[in-house]
Amino acid sequence: MTATDEAAAPEYPGISKPLAGIRKIAARRMVEAWAAPVFHLGVDVDMSAVLAADLKAVGSTVTDAILQACAVALVEQPGLNAHYADNVITTYPDVNIGLAVATEKGLTVPVLHRVQGGSLSDIAGKRKDVVSRARTGKLSMKDISDGTFTVSNLGMLGIDEFDAILNPPQIGILAIGSTRKLPVAGDAGGVELRPVSRFTLTCDHRAVDGATGAGLLTAIRRQLESFAL
Image (cartoon, rainbow, N blue to C red; front, side):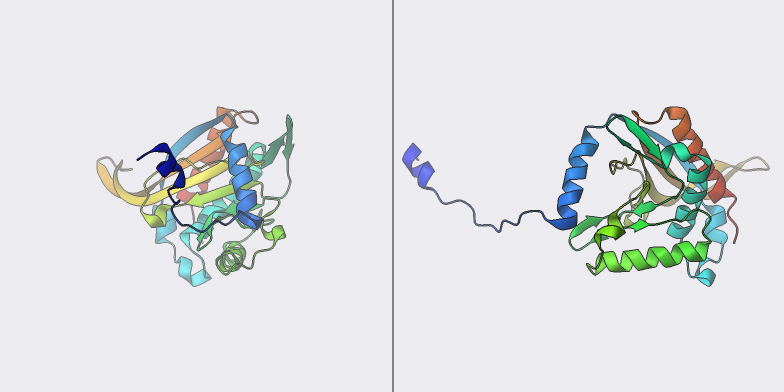
């Protein structure tokens, strides 16, 4: 093929569609996230107490229990309930947790606003509302704004462990893997098989250090391993 023939060759047909709305905002934030110096911390969480509870009785799920544990932990560790921008760290009294949701149009992160001190039923109600509207394309800009922390749960998709990308200007995001039966040292000695999930926290190192991140993960694990309705 000559240079002239190559130049005249038709391009593969396709449909071009510029990013717009929520997808455009998400793309911009991903570029910002890659520029942040991050570190990752991980813990294994024994989910026995959560799975033993009758969550359906209060209209909730394991995800709601995790969101509640995060809300409690973020009140204890406000350094991660924060934003970082232009060399300024801003912490917030309200805990507004974004929840990564897969939709037909891609990943969306609606926000559950003011979940600090919320009951499991309250959090479940907010989660059902925003997830439903995310999947039907009915979210407003307010629904995806003002998040102070994000949770991404891929456990139900069979992913054991992953590192989530920050959602700027937030400085922390929690990635949750699948719950698997793993050998754990029993309280009375010996080895037991227990349901264990891997929790991985991504932090912006410009705003927090490892001790603060470890404090948050420890608090989340404590809440879940002592969970009770």
